[in-house]
Image (cartoon, rainbow over all chains, first blue to last red; front, top):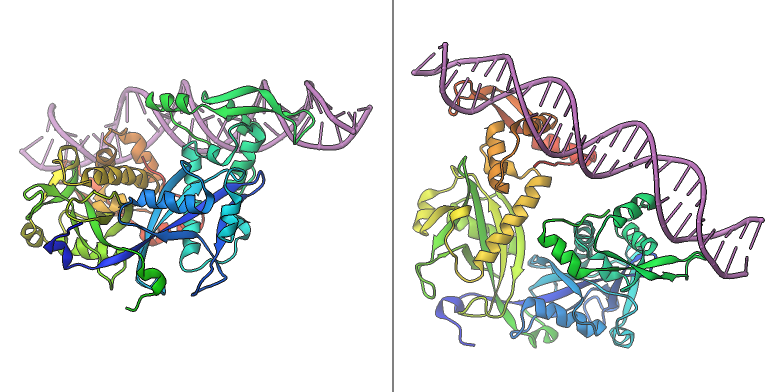
Length: 232
Length: 232
DNA sequence: CCAAAAGTGTTATTCCTACACCCATGC
DNA sequence: GCATGGGTGTAGGAATAACACTTTTGG
């Protein structure tokens, strides 16, 4: 690409993309981290990252990074924040644009992740990370908590079919606090976009819990009509 | 700065900083825009922007851009979003990190702004902007609306001393909807951080309205103790 | 004395919270 | 038949929303 005399007097910078990858194992909120294979900080834990290429948008770059580690495409991803302290990366001045992703822990490519020395950690017991990755994770957690209250993104962390106790357990994990199961059910049952199936999950109780599904189309229609999501 | 063999195989990019500058004229929410003086899009309206330098953080870069136009430092600024479509800037691939700022329309350097062909526009009647600056403004507005409900940033747009009707008028402008003045006053009067002064503004009524101030220190203390801001 | 904006109080409704019991099933 | 988790209903309290009148004062 040809550039311009006005632009060419300015400096260019490395632009990195770092992914905070969340998962849920029916108990705890998890983070997919990789063990860094090169200096500096070799052997320490870090977020999955990579450099922006010239022929991709930053969104596309973040999707590529996620796919490189997990093999997944089309999953929920949201830009979190751009980190730009001068010395945040000791090797070279690098601007990092952080994204967070919500994936289903049973659907990613484990061999691929293994080959990058990736490992899941419960958010509550994550190791210290390199550079400013710790603050990225903190911000992602805060964002996820806020978003999950007002937008139906929790479903991205659950299987297509889920039970209400599973969903509650997820929200308890996200917010790190117990919820009253009666009030939670009551609120959910008033949500039109929640579709009850004629099928039960019997893996966690003798009685079994009904499966539900999130009706994305109906939800979009309801949003158009002015109703809004709220859960906590 | 020396870089690294691992880094050097990657591409570098122009990184720009664009500022959405909000003001309030006692009636309407305003935007400070500049008339672009060079091609392409010469003569069209745009946000104030500039390129990131190697020796400044992105926050510092944004502050520098704002100061270049307004002469102001230390004003409220928040990173909004990083825009990174490949062709968002037709001249050269440029990542833009957008910030929004809240300034007092009576305190900036008008000569400086004039020298950049800057002009205030009511948000409701802003001209079409270049590149993706329109979506930046939309996002900034949405963010401002959300923030103003849960954090005491509205005061950044008002003089140190303000009246309750002024504050209400500001919130009406931000959210573009009328508020019940009785409920608004009631809510405010229950806010401990609102300091009533023994002085009245008589410019807008014969009776006069008491001036108030925001007690930042007390607010911080209250936040520490777990109370939270909410206004709408 | 009157116009124009400032200030204040009460009630109805809605939403949220707390809380306890019955149900279905596999063993 | 009992232990285990799943499912439902009600009542009290808090926050919100709706609404009308009195006050001050410059002209």
